[in-house]
Image (tube, rainbow, N blue to C red; front, side, top):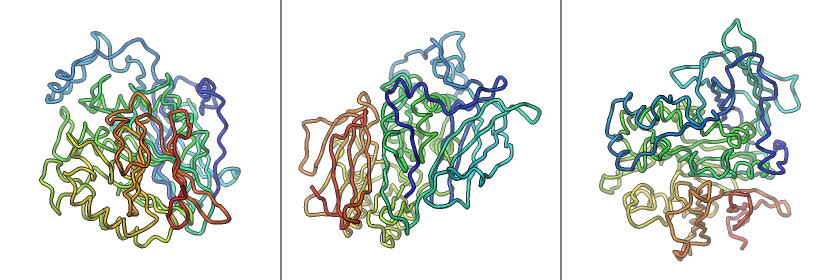
Length: 497
């Protein structure tokens, strides 16, 4: 498997100086303040996303949102007057665009050029395309007919209109997945749960600096990328929701990482409306269905079906599940009809797992399937009693195989769960910062826990070869990239430790 080259980072202070904007803008904007994001990469295609901004970075400002109580936020969340809600947390005389970290969007046009690494003579160019103001000044392309297992270079150019000079450029890279005939080492990471207010470095989250040094083939964010229902601000409107996305992805550590890394973005409750959101709910005037649209069609690379399976070479296949769009209401009584996945996705999952001849199969879910989860107050995932019937069905199916592994986000602690005398394993990646960790006691080690750590970090996965035989490694790492636990499996799915 071809692995892209990443410059080693000596320290966070050095990383903060790095920028993919390799040319100074010729005129005053527009800029690529949010860089670019890629998504849904398979053997032959990928979706590319970018956005134009009025300033090249998040705003350096002393203006902050007003603090409001949880009771006030609950009351505002029931209102529908957009103008009132947009002003409710702003200081007098201060606009949203003046708040610290703001990265406002603007009209303009973007041109994209891409080519396989070290083969610039094979470049393809897509003509100037206008960003869409109705979709937060973003534009997307689906690139097809790509070579498998190949690193591609990207060059973006921005201008105001057809009569304007180029105002900004941005460079990045992504990698296509290798097909079933490709064998070779692989590195990947899985993260969850981090927002702007709980970053652990002025320039973003430290895990992004650590993961850049992991030489990743791909990365998966399992959701709760941002939190609409947390302060600074509580995002009751589409404008405030967009503000949160724009601010988060203007952070230098995040922007630099996504410019260099093949990524898959999943969504969870806080990315749609608020905690444990399900169909039929609203947050201010924003409906659950509109929350799905903002995530799937505007803020991230889009795909008609938001679940998929990708073959990353002969020995690894991954499944990315959709956990919000098809679910029943959490409050419905449990029954064979109650679902998180929906019948079509669940049958697809079972069929594709059964048909796969990959050595290792990794199912990535936004929330736990095995758990354990907190016994009180949680009724949102397959490890809870609220969805036990479907959870039991999934666990029984997977237990027939000896080389399938669940990986998940949502929970704010790192763990490995394995039920004795079963083939069931689950790896919870944990929150992206120590400040964001919690919800479980470090002393509450259950019999099924192989590992438990109530701290921030990420899950690092690796396919290696010993005497030409593949092995799968899962390492829990802290926010600085230090390994704190490891599980290793041989080609039969048996643990080696």
